[in-house]
Amino acid sequence: MNTDVYRAVNVGGDGAGAIRIGRKLSGSKGPQANRWSSRAIFLIAAIGFAVGLGNLWRFPYLAGANGGGAFVLLYAAAVFVIGLPLVVAELAVGRAGGADPVLAWTRLAERLGGSRWWGAIGVLGVGASFLIVSFYGVIGGWTLAFAWNALSGLATGGMSLDFAALLADPLALIGWQALFLAINLAVTRLGLSGGVERAMEILMPLLVATLLVMLGLATVQPGFGQAVGFLFTFDATFLTWDTALEAVGQAFFSVGVASAVLVTYGGYLGEDENIGRLASVIVVADTLIALLAGLIIFPFVFTAGLDPTDGPTLLFVTMQAAFSEVPGGEWLAAVFFTLVAMAALTSSLALFEMVAAIGDARGLSRGPVLGMAGGALWVLGLGTVVSFNVAADWRPLGGVPLFADADFFGVLDTITAAIAMPLGGFLAAVFAGWFVPRETWALLLRCEADAWPLALWCALIRYVVPAALGAGLIRGLTP
Image 1 (cartoon, rainbow, N blue to C red):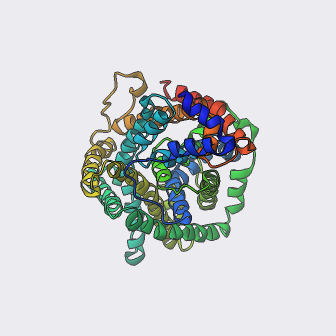
Image 2: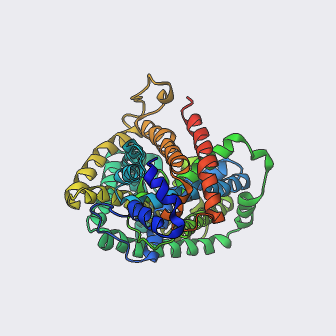
Image 3: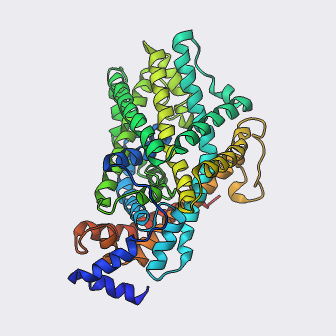
């Protein structure tokens, strides 16, 4: 570490040193004019990013497959012990280095006398996010298809959408994928305030209101008590190493760390915002909504006498069957699948905003940047589309043990979920915990160096987070 920087940090008690290092770390972000219009809109957007299909789809089926209450307990612990420290770190890095994730990590490392190769953390996050959006666009298209089918069914008395038939139809998947991408591109093209902020001001209140309506309807279902017991009854037999790693993985992805988006959102924060408090609100809200999703989905599943451990088909197959068994099910389906589509959009808009921020930081117009990115994502997404039908038997990396049984979609999912994001999170924790001194974090986070929350955060980011992500990375790389 640069000795002048270290000395400035350690003489910060007289005020002058702290001012010098604070300016060096948080100033000079480069061309960055965008700012959140208010703290409230930042929280709405950040929570909207975290609250996506990971909450409404992945969390319920993982809880169902891993014993309910035991998984929920491990998940909640992982969110606050692993997710929260990384959220704080990424927001702080963004505010210090700017909204471009690659430049943000590079700038902060160089100002502290380190190698610009730390920018690889941002490269991993951006690369992983790009691959994720390519297949998330296809999955987002599913949500639009189900929402449209449910809403149009109110007027036509239509039937439930056959999920297997949808997956088997590449042209239908391509159409819904294109529509989902087009909506994202149209919104982010309008800029931060006119696009993402305006969309989040509409979508998030609607999403929360819909969640509460669905929760109210779920509480009067005969299966509500069984659902509560399933989610919150503790069974120690499920406290296994595999369940713990599943919970850590879900917590890691649920709050959106290592995807570079929180660095971008941090780059739009004002200098006076308390990042620790903001991060805590984001994580608490994300966790509550994940639990609400379980309390909404499982009562209908149990009421219909269906299996809560149905896995990935829980959202698109089991829930349709459940709604068909209860009075007013067609209205419930319309509300529920509209909710799912909104959640998919609130997450994906953040990923497109991150792409736009990279262009903004380099003085490029949003239109061309987003247009090229959208085209590339659509083409790459075609590989995911055909993985469910005409190329279902294709194994593009069949000679590599880790990918031996993976189709194109499976390859992308493994690269992002098992390699790039855990590795990026691991390196971020190593950088934050071992390279950046505690006194410097006090300046970046606008808190006292001897404050106990900072001491706890430093201990978690230095020891616990790297150990947990390292174990997850090793597990993910094991064929």
